[in-house]
Image 1 (cartoon, rainbow, N blue to C red):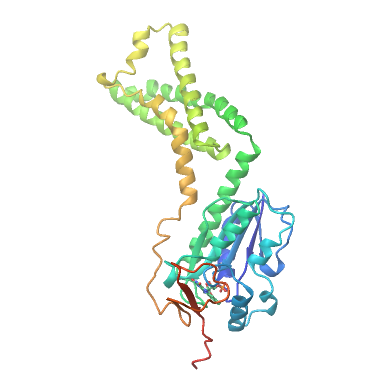
Image 2: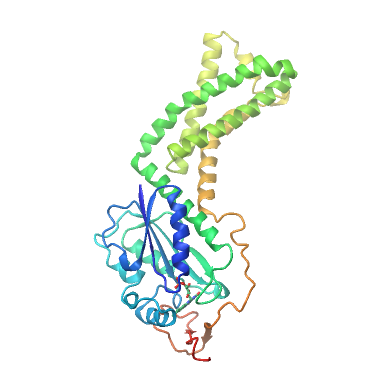
Length: 366
Ligand SMILES: Cc1cc2nc3c(=O)[nH]c(=O)nc-3n(C[C@H](O)[C@H](O)[C@H](O)COP(=O)(O)O)c2cc1C
């Protein structure tokens, strides 16, 4: 798989983050990083596109905001002509079905204000058929020119890695049809039954010597639950379950096969009476074997959910970045006015009131 990370940046903050994001994605697949100036129009050779852009006037940059940023930062004039917005609109052929993830940088102090470059880019990408693999993400700068808030580079790398994992999962389940995934999981039940037999062997050979029989049975049930969970988590990494319904179908198939094996083999091959076989399920007699079929039914669903949540959520402490600090906006002032002046590039007035963004020349007051 191949990914491309495209970044637009004037003061260097989005570019620095893009390098970390790229390093994160590169833990999972081949990746290249290009700035907006060198971004290709044809993305057919890539399996994942990651876009990073600075928030300008509550959205993606426009010629006027880029002009402002270029003047202030001294970045190259070529950037005024093309930002993420123009580049995405010019992609040929349209990136239909391409996995994408979008991030932006914005000022920490006004993080509660709506509108960001990532929202706009995400909308634009969806409108041309691309498929987001995760929710858009914002990273924060302490002032219009930066620097980034402490911890954001690390968060960027982790986000990049998660994006890579999600894109790979999506590609994995796309290359295998849902029925192929189901068939593989059904065959993989054999591996689960081998684990159960081995676990029973360990109980009969070792545990019963160390503990009394009920204790040995309970411990061995617990061990089997852990083994099955680890095995199914491995299977889900290899053949990601394509949906909740499929996860339940796989669980039900595994339970049916397990019960058929346990009772069929136990009764017809080993000659055990039904009452002996059913005794394992007698909760009132302190037998907890019932947990095995119940967990076997639910585990695929739970594992799929946990894995999706782990991949989509920010890492622990992601929100705990230092939000105090110097006057965060620096030279930039954001205010609302009943009837204000629109800075070029403001898409939507908030609450019917105009949004005014003043980005005074830092040298003006000097
Ligand atoms: C013209 C202009 C408009 C801006 N508008 C916003 C804004 O609406 N909201 C915000 O959070 N930051 C705003 N910023 C701050 C930028 O988000 C910040 O400069 C950017 O994250 C820095 O990224 P870069 O170093 O990659 O250029 C604006 C900056 C400029 C130059």
